Structure formats: structure tokens, C-alpha cells
Image (cartoon, rainbow, N blue to C red; front, side):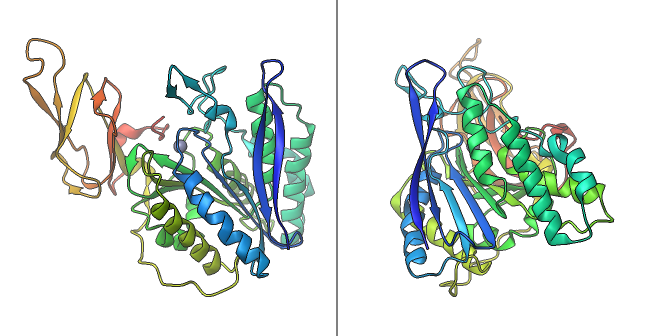
Length: 379
Ligand SMILES: [Zn+2]
């Protein structure tokens, strides 16, 4: 048994400045399964830090009781570089200052980097293949020499996540109900998590186009399985982005409940011993991410919502009015913004001043939408 705190020092790009990336390990070192959790990769999204604040003592107790059947690696605040982005009293946290890179985009394509090296090594033994695939990924990681602090941070995080059976990345929306972004292969393994989370929507995409952290891991296994149907390759990296409501929803009661629900999920999978305290309600069926409409503003204005989170709307129904802020009808005219699909209102915008292109709401429909194209993320 072990419940330990670690700090990994990352030099900043500016001389003389460093950051300590703190993380925890729990559970028996020789456990067969590994669970990797992180929060606040988008550093402006802190509900996940609160969830992990409440999860850590639960894991510590389970560890002391000998109830952990998996190794847990937890980064409660995985992006200290983003936490440091306070400019003129406003916290950024979503984009790297130097490169403009969204902290949750452009993670390496593991299949592209390692697929060719893995192919000739595959055997007819499933367990051996899992070992070979992970070993090849690790040796690729070991061959890298990351330069900028952003890449140093990403590299270290990947060396802790590469052999995890479960990778859970805790985020939040602007103002939203709990939901998940997940690949279809991972979704098949995470039905219980959706139930335990009280997830209002599980939005599935094989490839959302952005190279987000949660897609890196399952994508490798899904594509290896497709490329080598003659070899036994168990799908071995179940991952998801967990959206814990909106950015302002950082409260003890929510964090405590969400942490207990994660424990319930881990118990349901046998990763923590014990019977779950209750049976959660069933979450709705997953829907394709390209069936969720991102309603966007087409002119500047002030939003006046007509719908609340969780409301069901029909295509063509006004979901908000946009109060004009310029032109001859400024401050008097209201232009309705219409739903482009039928479904449930999953998210809204916390601040109400919008300019063209701003996301106003997400509506979870069931029919794929032509307008969504290849790139499915909101950014
Ligand atoms: Zn995020």
C-alpha cells in the first residue's frame, strides 16, 4: 500500500523560474490495472480540482484499508503553467502564452509516432501485445527531448499516463450540466461512469479533430486493432473528458458528491473493493458529437436567454434574444437566436456579451448536422 505525494520540477522558459507539478500515487505498485486522473488542464476550469480535493482522502482511506485494486496516479492541477497566466487581474489558462496552443489540443498522434514500430513486434498473445505496445510508446517518449516548458510538462504527463487502463481528464464548460466527451470504444466501457456522474450527455466522436488529451490514448488502440485484425489486441486505454458543469460551479457539496460518485464508478469496475453505496440513475444514451449543435452569435450583442440548462427545445425555437449594441436600433431591438436542431440545452454562456462566432449554447440533438464538418470542438 502507498499513498504518496510527488513534485516534479519543470523549468520555465524564462531563466531562474521553475514550477512544481504536484501529483499523487495510491494503491499497490504491483496492481494489474492503472487509473490516471487529471484536472485543470485548461487551467481556468477548476471544478475538477475541487472534485480531486474530495477524492484524495477517499483514496487515501481506501488505500489504508487495502481496498485499492488498481494503481492510481492523480494530478489535481496538471497545468501550473496555465495557473500563472494572470494578466491585468484576469486569469487566462486556456492557451499557452508563447505558442497560442490550446492546452488541450495538438497532443501527439501516438499511432503515427509508434504504429510502424509496433506492427512487426505483435504476437498472437493478447497480454504480450499490450505489454509490447506500451513498451514501444514508452521508448518513443524516452527518445524525446522536449524543449519549451509546455512540452516538458506534456512529456512528463504522458510518461505517467501512457500505461493507464483508464484516463480521466476533468474539465468544465462555461455554464453546463455534467457531460462527457468520449470515443465510441471508450464509451462502451464507461456506461457506469456516465450513470455515476449523472451525465446529461455522452458526446461521442472517433476523432474530434483537435488532438485532445483524452483522444490520444484510445485512438492508438482503436487504430492498431483496425490495422491488425489478425492479432489479438485488447482495447486497453479507456479515456474520457469529464465536464463537471460550469467554471463557476466550484463548491464543496458538488465536489464531495462528484468524488463519491467516482468512487462508486471505480467500485463498479472492481478498481476499488466494496459494494457501491447506491445504484445510480441511468444516464441518457450516448449521441454523436456531430449531432450536438454549437449555437453561435452572428453579430455583437447582449444575450437574454429564453431557455434554461436541461430544457428540451425544438428546431427553430428561439433560445435567446440578442439585444443590439450598435446600429440604429441599438439597445432597443431584440433578435431571436433559433435552435438549429431539436434536443436538450446542455450549456450556455456565463457572461452575456457576445461577438460574432461566440458560442451561445450547445444543444444535444440526435441527428448528425452537416454544419459541424470535420472539426468538432468548440475551442
Ligand atoms: Zn476544458
